Length: 257
Image 1 (cartoon, one colour):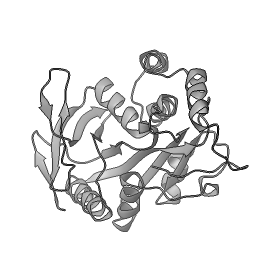
Image 2 (image 1 turned 135 degrees about the vertical axis):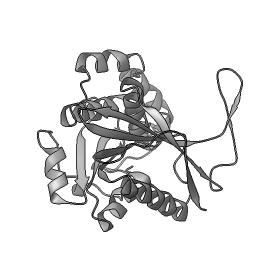
Image 3 (image 1 turned 180 degrees about the vertical axis):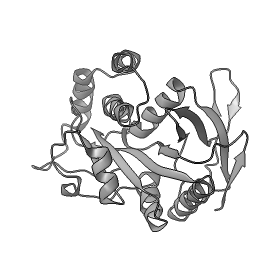
Image 4 (image 1 turned 90 degrees about the vertical axis):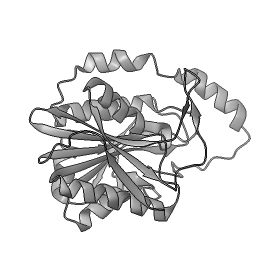
């Protein structure tokens, strides 16, 4: 279950900020990072390969076969090299996830990277109309730096459940190497069919402010609104499917990441 990184373009070194957003709850991280890749005109510099990748392919809009992939892109904004990880899948096992994260960290250290940001979702049992945003980090300094100015309903540690996958493990392993890392999570709905556009939008705007990405908030709203789901229609649909399910009295979650 080894991972290899193929270099396909010139690699920036020094002062890099790595932002990860792979598929997860509501695809919050994936939506946010792919939006940044598009709007910041990031260029692909690495392709990651592994024999642990799923044994299937996708068929694109041109009816051409595509293998599942995870890639790293780069762009430069206000003197910072921004590295962006996006892809079709998460590593498929615990061992593979550890190998993947360590390979990323090896490469990040060699390029003299500065900070890591991972993005994910918090699964709720109801569709959030105004998703909350939460922060956790591998140091108090990083936590204060990125959570300053953000409103949260309650502390993340009050939720039940671990942060799964690369979203949680990458910052954890980064801490062992003294690489500052922060995880930013937004509330979304637990259904695998739900797309967490609102949560992704909130995180994009927060990173826009913190990293001075020079994106216009009104354009972020406009460009994402066509992808959004009508919350009332979606809630009516899931109610029909789940009306017989007994829900607990207090808020809970099954998965973060």
